[in-house]
Image 1 (cartoon, helix red, strand yellow):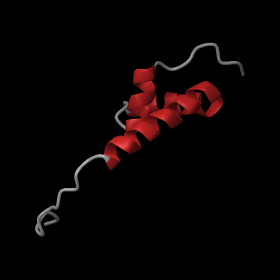
Image 2 (image 1 turned 90 degrees about the horizontal axis):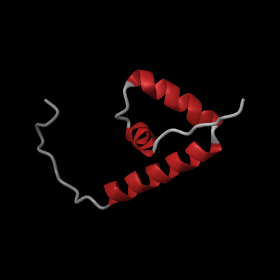
Image 3 (image 1 turned 180 degrees about the vertical axis):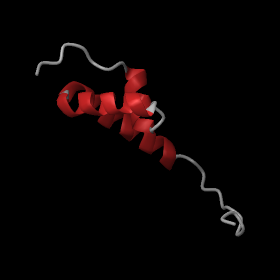
Image 4 (image 1 turned 120 degrees about the horizontal axis):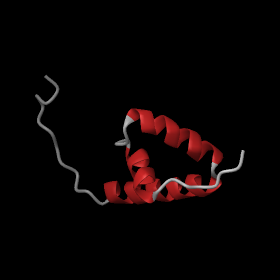
Length: 67
């Protein structure tokens, strides 16, 4: 299988963030599995997302938040 087109960056970011529509997520996952270029882009997106999360201040939640 030869891949001739790549996923656009917005699709890869949404996939990495878990916000992509479930049906499109299946398509994106299959494409990323086969495409080393998009797989690399997704790893970059995940690293950026991780860095953003690390930069957030921790906020305590109340004791009754699980009730």
